[in-house]
Each structure stands twice: as C-alpha cells, then as structure tokens.
Image (cartoon, rainbow, N blue to C red):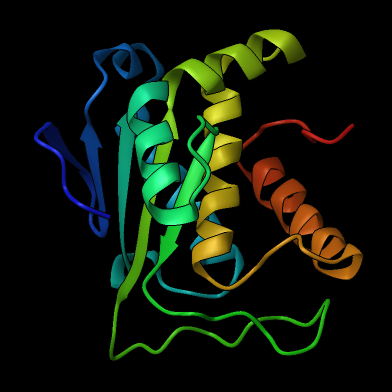
Length: 174
C-alpha cells in the first residue's frame, strides 16, 4: 500500500498507524490497532512484539481510490488488507501456515472512517468497537484467513469472536 502523507503514530512495537482522516482521533485508532494486533497475534500463538503491521485511518474517498487501484472496485469499503505474502491454506477450512519469523512484516490495513461510522450507527454499536472488529478481521486476512468458502468463513468468524471476547467486546455476529 502506498504511504500517504499523514500524521504517523507508533502505537506499540510492531504496529504503525497512519491517521490521514482526523475524525479517527476520537476513536483512538492507534491504541485500538495496537490492542487488536496484540490480542489477535497472541491468540494465534504469535509473539506480538515480533511482527509488523501498518494501519491507515482514511476516509471513503481514499479507500475507494485504493479499492479501485488494487481490487478494480471503485467504491468505498470498510477495511482493506494487503498481506505481505499469500498465506492462505490450500484446503477450505484449514488453518493457514504460521508466518515465517525471518520476515516479520505481515502487511497493511486501511479503514475508512465514513463507512465504518455508518455501519456502526446502523448496527447500534460504538464506532471504536466496530473498528476494533474490523482491525481483527483485517489482521486475520494478513495471516491467511478468509471467508470465501463456508468452512473458511466459519473458522474466521469463530476466531474473531474469541479474540474480541478477550478484548471485552461482544460477538459481532449475534
């Protein structure tokens, strides 16, 4: 993902958050990204201090541009992920292989404020809780998890619920 000119905040070792849209300030995107990354990686048996993730907090216009460039879908979305390598398992529902410790860079995420805020309001959830869920979801994508098949979706959703529970957040799917 190209690095935009933005205010950068190092939220925790291994998580760099670039805040391009200042509306993310009230949601503490850097803090949420750091906590979500630590919880996700630890839940999967990975030392959070060893791995690197970049998170961009942007708006709908910027994420639509990124979505058009990288996925040929010129519209906003809530979260995009760019894994540093394809870690998807060959068999649906299987666990992805652990990332190579020799290459600590897992990849990049981008979250769109406008879409996230709309979705949170529609679901009656706090924006910060929804953003945390999307960060966990995105990090799972960086680690090779997906929801393309029913088996993959069930595995990924189960992990999201477990991780969010450890963060004190409710099941986003109930």
